[in-house]
Image 1 (cartoon, rainbow, N blue to C red):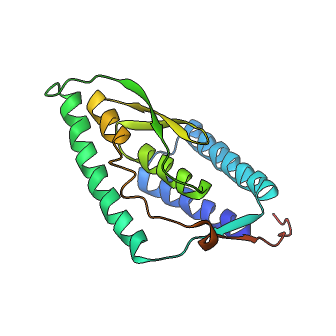
Image 2 (cartoon, helix red, strand yellow):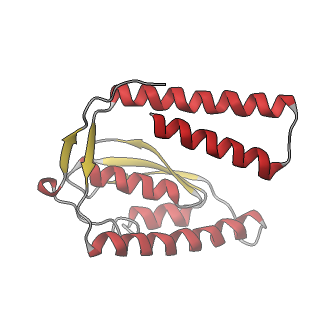
Length: 170
C-alpha cells in the first residue's frame, strides 16, 4: 500500500506540473479521484488474495504482436467509419467460446474489448455477447478471427498462488 500511495503522489505532482492547471476545483477533483483510487485499491486487496502465474512462452509474445496488429487495423477501420467512408452498422452477436479454462476465456474477452470498435458485454460458460461497430467485425469474431491468436493455456499450467495478507499502513 505504501508503494501505491507513493506512486499516486508522484503521478499527481507530475500531472499538476505538466498540466499547468492550478485552479482550486481541478486540484480538489484530482485529490478526490486519487483518494477514490487508493480506497478502491485497498478494498480490492481485502477481497482478492491470490495471483495467477501465467507461463511466459513464445505464444504469449506472438499473441501480443498479433493483438497489436489487430488494434492498429481496428483503429483504422473505426476512423473510416467515423469519417463516413465506411458505414457503421452497430450490432450485438453471441460468439461461442472455444476455450476450456476460465483464464483463456477472460483473456479472450479482454482482447476483444481492447480492440477498438468491439466490446465484450456478457461472459457465460460457453458463449460471449459482443457489441461491434460493424456487422463485418462481428462476423469475423464469430468465425474465430480473434480466437486464433489467443495463447492456448492448459489448466495445469496456470498456478494460483495465495498472496500473503499485508498489514494495513497508511
